[in-house]
Amino acid sequence: MNSKISLLTVILISLLVFSCKKKESDAGNSIRFVKIEKVGMSRSHQELTFNGKIMENTLTSLSFRVGGPLIKLNVNIGDYVEQGEIIAVIDKRDYEIQVKSAKIQYDQLSGEFTRYKELFEKNRIPANSYEKIESGYLMAKTAYESAAHQLNDTELKAPFSGFVHEKFIENHQKVSPFEPIISMIDVSELQVVTSIPENQMEEVKKSKNQYLDIDNADVYGLPISVLSIDEKARPDGLYQMKFTFQNLKGHKILPGMSAEIKMSYKEDSKVSEIPTGAVFNLNNSSNVWVYNNHSKSITRRKVEVRGLSLNGKIEVLSGLRADEYIVTAGVYNLVENQRVKPLQPKSSTNIGGLL
Image (tube, rainbow, N blue to C red):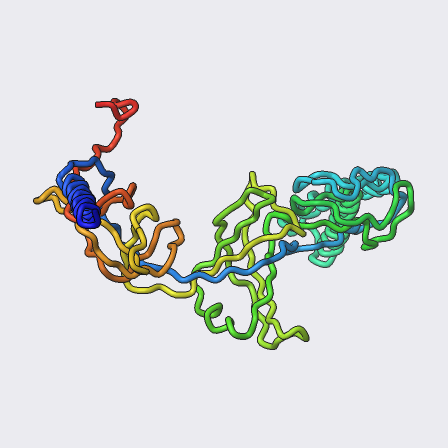
């Protein structure tokens, strides 16, 4: 009885081994469609990331050059104003009277100056008489131009496009020359400020390219330029670093927003870049399937990977050569030396990839 059981056990084991080998053989001999891609080469960049805060580059207080009762104040805190837009107006009445008076005197002396100039050029009057008339004419001209400028200065216009930050006076109050009326934030050019720890200062100073991501403004990869960096650590042991950038039209970047600063500080020699789906783990190592165009089969290749590149692909330090082709999908369903057929790329005339 025992001998029959032993014989049966041997037969079952033999059948199991044969079945496994047959499946492995069938898998190796069957042709499978696979997606392949040529190995790409690029220069690898190492990157640092810091959190930052958007700040205004310019905060300016605006004031009139003349004084008088304020009759119009057209803005409120938070309003956006365009360059050249009228912000506030002083009562023009007294300044209009001054312009009219100065113009009458200027016109009168201008006519006299013209007549005396003609006489002087004909040597009919002495030089000192001509000089007195010329001096009076120039004084009247200056007075008229000054009065005209003062009248123009009764309108306070935005020197740049930006937001009203503060109001220092209310409508219908009397204002003095150069008394601050409002403050404005220039948002055409902004800053982003961050803090750098001491152990990363060397890499930061080596950085060549800096970019900005602002989630709340839906802005990514915005180039920025280094504005300043502290030479001495602050009480918290960190070094403040400032960057500047242009706030292009269409961007909704405002002071106070949080941002992420990315700095590329090191460029390595050329490395391979492959899709993440091409790498599989076997025996605690990273591997890929390399496609052989002559045998129409694949072989497993161990590779040394470092991590993800800036464009989301895996950087391979060794194990692949340029222009080799690798399988980029379904890598766990393949076996060594399996015959494969590359999938043809889809085209605009092959909808659904059926042809």
